[in-house]
Amino acid sequence: MNNLYKKYKEEILPILREEFNIANDLAAPAIKKVVLNVGAGEALSSKDVIGKIKDQVAQITGQNPRITLAKKSISTFKLKKGDAIGVMVTLRGKKAWDFIENFISIVVPRMRDFRGLEKTKFDHMGNYNLGITEQILFPQIEYSKVDKIRGLEVTFVISNSNPEKSARFFEIMGLPFRKST
Image (cartoon, rainbow, N blue to C red; front, side, top):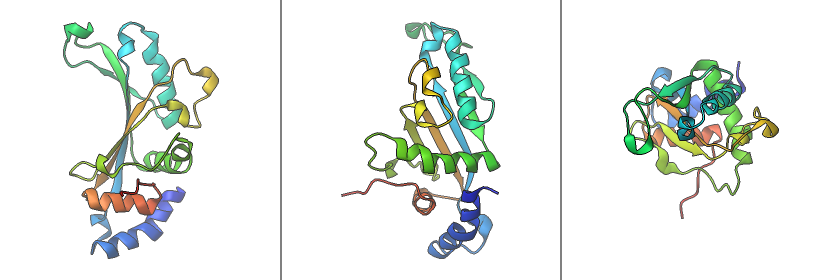
């Protein structure tokens, strides 16, 4: 069993139940899934870029990512419907908890000029979105094998939540948020 999931069951869940007056464990905020997305506009000019990004995302997540295709043509960008323009992967269950534990304990401390995550990145359902500027923050990526520094977007999808509950959920888990002045 994952250490963070164990902490969630034993420590975080009782705190959330008490603070938000939740009667049932199933009504408490919980991780539903984690979605990683990498957009690659440069894939239009170089076909091997998608393969490299796909390999890196697979190393980060331990799961085979899916190639995303353009939904419509945009002549200004020389983009045709069906062109490969990115890579995405959805993590659920144990893999999602492993990713979050890795993210909190290793990736966040490696961020440059880090002053905390912004609390404004929650949507109305309590899901949290953030952009990571460098894929080399993840320990699974070998810096010497990286052709170009690329960013990625991470979405933490939380069930049974709202922005306030999700923020408290992540604070108890150990995700550092920026102090508002």
